[in-house]
Length: 156
Length: 437
Image 1: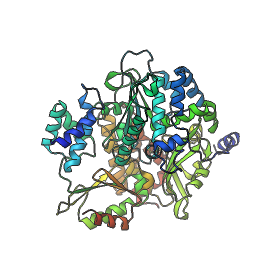
Image 2: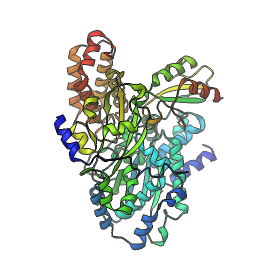
Image 3: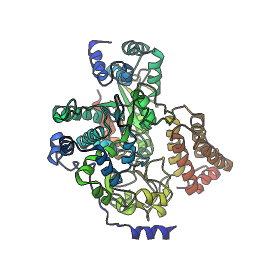
Image 4: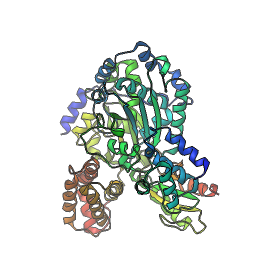
């Protein structure tokens, strides 16, 4: 874990009492994942060591929350919501287009390691359906085929 | 039944409009900035309270008069909930804002966070003052990452302006507020799962009692309320409880945001005076898209029963109005379905959601939601028999009421209501292997 990441985790730790470091575990794992794209076994161990938690307790959290990835997801993870409000506005059409264009199914990575496609549950932004997020951070709403094609072009 | 509804509609004052309380900065320039909020009188209420050292009991009474009910779905009266917090507790007390909205169709808290965060912060400071809490958290849905970041900035601005931290405005009152985020677990919207999550654990709900007011974060007294609930508080203190109550109808005081999604021309958030007729809101949302006919509506999110068009068209949007038609306000997550919607496909997707999001703690929910999804999937693939529909009902009823939290009940509700109102469509799939639509 480098200094930059430690600093970010320290900032999260300030939100909690000094003897409750475990509270920052979700944030710490998210910080580690944002840095490299996914969480390795070593990442889990480092977070456990840094927060003074048993490794199994960290792994439990990493496997419980859906936005964590314990396998490589490529440079850009596209998480697309297929839940009801998105489904009613043709998310399936977007999904099929992405699958065809990227030649991958859900949970697969393109051969060049650039894209991964994930099916997501409700993101709490259904007014903008259909929608997807890139690497858990940037949301793209009111999608249509043109917008998706444009987005794929922009993700270099 | 329609007679009853018509009569009720006459009795109510149906002169209801869109009215922004929680979203009142949304039409202004830079709606989310502290400057904008202060330009409409923001933070004046907490100043007034701290300056005059207003008795917390007096403020609780005002909130009770307002009729404000928990806006996250349970609808519990806020004033009563706040009075559960022990006032003389010797130690840290916590208040938590639940912005972990992840029930399909729910997206109102996001707009409060990004367009009016300071009203939420002021509401939390007032709440902290009333309940004598020293620390607050706003737990934000992990998927709306950009809004989480912008809320961190809003907290920073409120700190700089002296509204958060130690000795707020020289009053001797201390309150620190932090933004924290989930990372993709619907269950963390359940208040005790949320508390577990803040403690750095899997979001598995706790047994109640003890309730959070006596045993919450780190075992300390904790209050959890929804974003919209907290954001309503400054307006109630400014205008008085009665004025808030007057915005709505008896037993449903105030305004409520309805998040309208699905088959409408203008999906989005609409803050309405409670008691507005459904048809009026549908018109505000541009009507059913593509000039199609309305088929059905889920009024408050999938954990509230689906209602066919002909019934909801005569309903009013308030707590009693929706109960009368066999549904509920829930979180105000209104999902509109037009005539082309396949109800089997819709239920299949919702059932997959509950299966995916069950935390796995209670057997009836962990196993039952899987059973439910697999049976509906069989129906959808034309591999089911008519007996499967009874099995579906049976399994759902056996989940309901047998779990620690309400996710089990929530998973059963769409199954039972979809089959009740649209049984023909399910039978059609079983007999002919395809959709009736």
